[in-house]
Length: 143
Image (cartoon, rainbow, N blue to C red; front, side):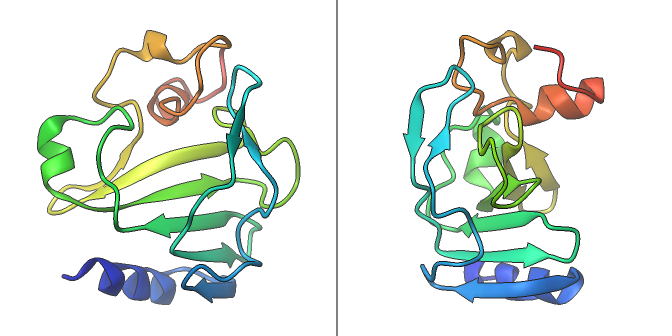
């Protein structure tokens, strides 16, 4: 499956309110995203995005699959990644609080950022980019 095909298939599986194809504004925050440690991450360069009926904003990027605390094998089988803001435009737009990365891996599914790394990387002095796995594993934000 081509990476852009995945996004088109995903759209059909979720209850969308709005879809923004290409780098069109209006589905993912236009404001800067903060890191967990309070520093500025900047604006996310999304290639496609959408908002679901429950207010979650999804930014899809099929160009970059490196890093984000996943295993090398998952990186090699990566289809693309989502940046997800669980409360859309509302504050704080901060990694580890309401913004999380997930990688889509061929024949495996959705892998949360940080699943292939030490969860101690997720604390208030870190950037928070790899906190998705820790939050899912613990069922809460505990840092």
